[in-house]
Image (cartoon, rainbow, N blue to C red; front, top):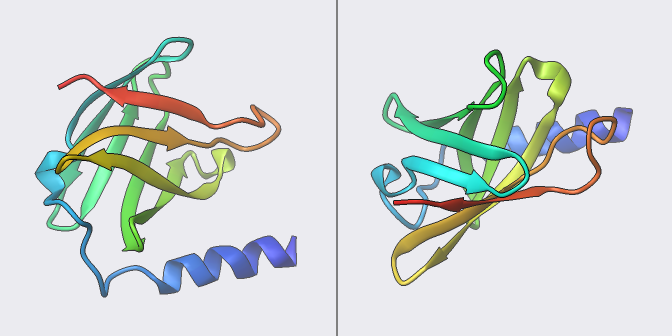
Length: 116
């Protein structure tokens, strides 16, 4: 458990000094996973994104950019975890995002493909 707390603290220390490859508006939109359904990603404030899980009314996550195209994803409720994630980018556009949840829910990440 202590190792996990240290890892999360290391990730948090990477937030705030760098900018993602693309402007935040390019990450905004609806994403789909064949098994899970859809999520919506919106911009909040000047430097964060929010994920709304459309299949789960009370589940969301905040994305904060760290560096090296990695984002810190913090779930609300927090019991779903804190993870790092990456968007897949090609030709100056966002293609997808891989989303992890706590291992007690699912071991593998879900790949959500951007619709627009």
